[in-house]
Length: 586
Image 1 (cartoon, rainbow, N blue to C red):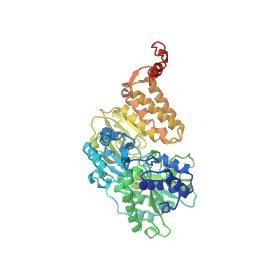
Image 2: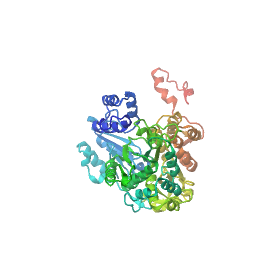
Image 3: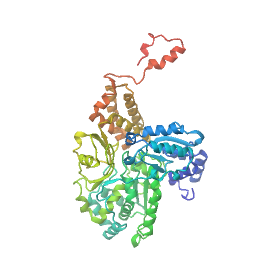
Image 4: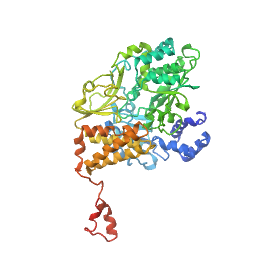
């Protein structure tokens, strides 16, 4: 295996992923052998193995069951289903069962919010639309040690659920047509079309795609690199999953068009670990494109146009959705965001000028090559051109993908998906914005409501305090720990919300949460910490009664009773005097 990867230390994450698939978990002896062979220290290898949540340096079950813990899964009853499976198998959550047979735990959103509750088996197989009957049969199959590939096939069916299609999800162009159009124009003219289209990045930040590609093209270097960010980790988002399943040719073609403009020879797709089951189908598409002369050497007969794409599978780390953290992971390291500048367009993968774009962005480059930049710019609004794909889930009759031109009203999306009695919509995932009913006339656009694609619907039966608390736990779990404001701040937010949930809260605690939001928003190293309090701030401002119902008083309330905590010690020392210890209460 090490030889197949060329004993390249930059392939460390892939090597550990494949090694774990062979052994079940990463033993210290195996990590030592990897370190020696790659010329790394054991501390370096163990540091990478300990960073990603899908790597295990201690034994785990032969059946590793991970329930998706997104809010939409919980709304559909995932917690009760997980408790039922644990009861049937006789295991505690997060603990290894007898004989090392099974371990059951939670993981962050698996990108299957439109068909949850969902879970992962051994990190590479998904089970959708869980219910009590499936859980009961699953327990029986595990106890009988039936191999996962022999489980009922309908369990593994992942539906695309395309509810409204437009230019990206509609009829697909023939593979190679857009690339041929780009070659006919030439690099300069094709770049001009991308700039004319005013295409902006679809990963959330909305940076001008043409400008990013131009800056990278102008950066000196012996090699330029094209990277596709398919680490779709934002809870509630699943559009990239469908694009990779249904429109992989368009995504790879967009990357190849970018390579033509940049003179790049190497392309990389960073596929999130939860989408490991897409690896073989994507490899098949890449191989077909090579056979059709759409990848490889002398693409479409053009001398000197050599470009190919490799797939890199992540190992479970939300922070790797940030482009510099993603590059660190591609280089075989912990996914810690880099200090910027320099930016990836000048110093990216292995120090080469690199563009990192979202799956949907590369997909959009394909119809622009075919139809022209002016055609794309005529769709949407002046500042937000083209269409946007929304991953709709939660309290609605028809969850799935909805593609609309930018400028579409929030209320229109709610009407189309069959939402009823809606009190809130979380747009853009936890790091986005929470909208209340009086804002449903606002529009999806970078100048109004920007979004990375998630659109989670909550009706009036939902407790928005609990929604925000769940998101707070997510951010605290996913913090990479690099900077103190995020590492400590996210933990303090969780502690404060848990205190409110336990009935010990006061308005003072809400004021402290506001102060934490201001501190983290201005001091954290990357966008994760800066946006971690977005759902907290929005829900306090717009759904304050949901918080106030948890308040015990208007004044400071302790999170615990010190007198009760000391009672055992007093009895043991013979000092159980009720009057003497009242002053210890805090």
